[in-house]
Amino acid sequence: MVKRHTAVALLSLMAGFCAPAALAENNLESKARQQFQPIPTTPPELPGNPATPAKVDLGKMLYFDPRLSASHAISCASCHDIGLGGADAEPTSIGHRWQRGGRNAPTVLNAVFNTAQFWDGRAKDLEQQAGGPMVNPVEMASPETHVAEQLKGIPGYGDVFAKAFPGEPDPITLANAQKAIAVFEATLITPDAPFDRFLKGDENALSPAQKVGLAVFMDKGCSACHNGINIGGGMYAPFGVVEKPAAEFLPPADKGRFMVTKTASDEYVFKVPTLRNIALTAPYFHTGQAWDLRQAVAVMGASQLGIQLSGDEVDKITAFLDSLTGEQPTVTYPILPPSVASTPRPQP
Ligand code: HEC
Ligand code: HEC
Image (tube, rainbow, N blue to C red; front, side, top):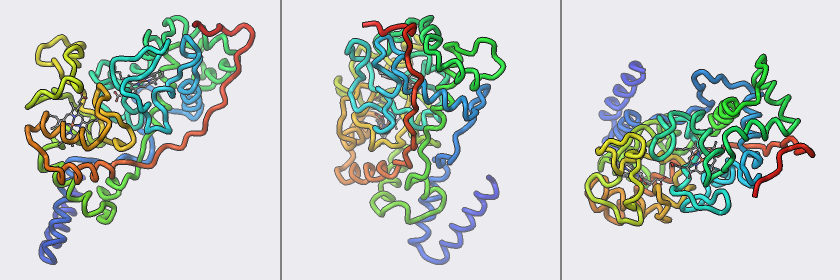
């Protein structure tokens, strides 16, 4: 690490002697490298939950299996569609009995790199998070004890769980389902975005407009919150640091992280969302009320930094944000074990 930084410093020094333009370029690159890291090309390991091919396969099946929901109509993929950037293109999601949830569905892509899950960070990791939606009454609405019962009622799952959790006498449990889903989600990473190639030294990976956008993004202070590997996902911040956003974006009822910590200073504090693949996941904000990425950028300038970005600055930042779209995961749709006569039936 130290060595690489020295090499970068030396290179930019040498470039300085050669040509001023090259120096500016190298400065941008080295400044960016101090604040952002590329997405790795292989899934990260989850502590205490080692990935095996059998566990990833099971996790994928569960992710796509609508029978984890009371109605047998809603799967994780209903609201986190891998073909839609890991989100659902709805302001707030439609769940059990056509109910609307209170918040916009964040992407599952690269979620493994977030320091906590949900807009308010109430789940510490993917494993804990995965237990939430199955039993949430407005999402999949399965009673907690029903999940294992349902899976045990689908005979084909017996073998698959046994392979994923070898040596366990009773492997079909909600906890194991959560573990398997988490290791599958850890595979949903999107390496090799133009911005990643830039961070790895390919100067031509970004267009001139994107480079200006990156510089503005760092100089104006967006990267004070949106930084690291996920260009976000690493901290909490109030929505409205300087100026309260319009009530459509920040309705008074959802106090964000306050609901988790009950601490006054956490009112209207939200997890800083990742900006990876942001061009694919409109609408924006926890309310899903901004359909235009340019509008979201302008709102951020005013609410978080107290500045009115010019139309040109908004365009350039948005161009930079486009460079955060990575290689989308290739997921082969799993064939799920069939229901049999004794399988618990869907509940209306
Ligand atoms: C009915 C829609 C719906 C279903 C079904 C659903 N989710 Fe979600 N998911 C959401 C919403 C909405 C949020 C944000 C809720 C919040 O922050 O309070 C969310 C949050 C998440 C997050 C956190 C991402 C982040 O950056 O904070 C992950 C991971 C996730 N869901 C995975 C899953 C998995 C795995 C399943 C299946 C077991 C699932 N979801 C089922 C709508 C859904
Ligand atoms: C003080 C921290 C902070 C700063 C500075 C900041 N943001 Fe944000 N950003 C957030 C938070 C928190 C949210 C979530 C808002 C919400 O609750 O919907 C967010 C949301 C966003 C979103 C919507 C993401 C989504 O998935 O819906 C975009 C786009 C965005 N920011 C871009 C920017 C840009 C561009 C800048 C600089 C002009 C910037 N941000 C500055 C904290 C910050």
